[in-house]
Image 1 (cartoon, one colour):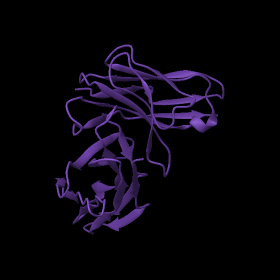
Image 2: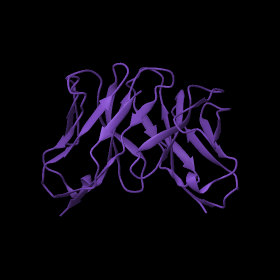
Image 3: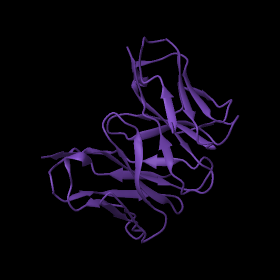
Length: 113
Length: 114
């Protein structure tokens, strides 16, 4: 089956620190990969995505590269801000009936001033 | 520019009571989904729909029923609520074009069953 594994949080950082959240996946097929972000009290929003091997998704200073050889899609940001405090979800999708997203468990990130 | 709207936002039920959660989307999306979010477990798919009049089971369908009588609405029903159904419920919708289209989420419904 399909599954996504993320590092457990919470991750606590100081402002301007470097952030990495690890994500690995198993999939029966060739998935597209996504990072979603959930700010407090809100639903999930798409942060970035990559649809094929070696693609790099980027948005709001965040980046993630689709690594097929290591089945990974790690999220990075070079200098975090307090406003980046949120829960981050890695997800995969394989074109099939329902186009269903499979999510990891989420990683809570807290950035302190 | 509503996107995906869920009602209600909060609800407290007693064990054995029933209720319906409503999801409405105004983007003419084909696909709609109901997820539940529990601490440390991410989002788990309850039921989904690939178009008006269709529904299918997801990963954790037991204790829930759904209906998609109109393309824009996807209803999630709990016939006899149990404390294990205490969770935050999210609805999402997605266009049909390709597998790469973005899924849009509602703001969630926090349900407590006592």
